Image (cartoon, rainbow, N blue to C red; front, side, top):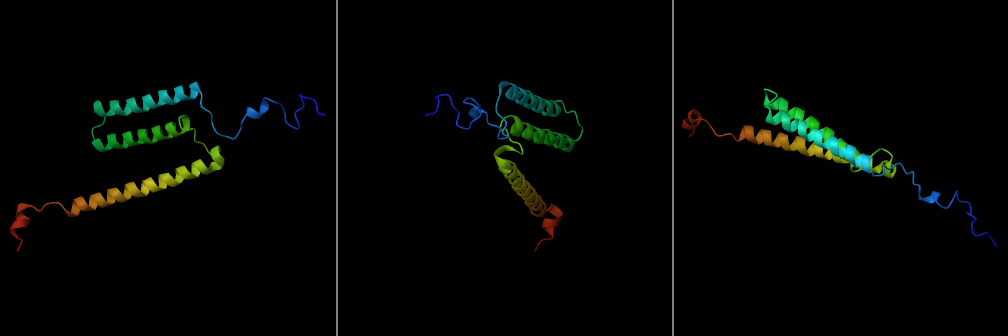
Length: 132
């Protein structure tokens, strides 16, 4: 008969709850840091747009898009707990696949909209008079 406190090859009774699979675990500190970064990354672009800091709207749009990209990363790290080690790297592979698809869809959509806008513009009055 074995003793009631024998571990049968395990390190200890309480040790089997410690998972070190590489996935980040949520904590109040992590969520607080993520929230504060998200608020800052939202407030700065809001100020840039409302304060008309840049003369050109295209510059403002590029800066706002850059802040949006940084905020996406903050959300993935602090709220979705994504890193290269979680789930054996599959979550990072899924992220890369998603980013590639989004880039293809956005660039393709912008390309189509630009060419539709360029090719479907109404004719000027001068061009309409020369029509048969």
